[in-house]
Amino acid sequence: MNEDVLHQKSPQELVGLLLEAALIHLEEGRLSIEAKQLQKANEALYKSTQVFRKLQEGIQPNAGIIADQLAELYRYLEDLTLQANVKKSIASIQLAETIVKEISSSWQNALHSNPPSQSLGRTVQQSYDRHVMTMNDET
Image (cartoon, rainbow, N blue to C red):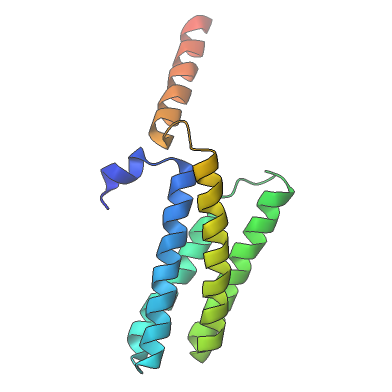
């Protein structure tokens, strides 16, 4: 997926894509451990920890209790995956996969029942336009 396509996605759709990426990296890590390809497993699991970190960073501070709990869950998944990588623990990876699948499924259900009305690019543009209009009104 190229950068232009990503800019067309809403923040909600981007979260869905990140969850999918985390699942792909977790599965690749698990399969690599099973195949005794430890370097490949390390790289895949490192990528999944990076995805969980990005998901945490995307949550706005003081956005409410649900956002705080989601941030804690992403932090837990990051720690779990990090420990799985250090110990090469298939059981820990499977636990992370189960949790991410549940989050992803719930996220997709919410996304389909309440489709985003606009992409992030349009939101940013509208915010910029409002700011410029406010500044022009003041001068």
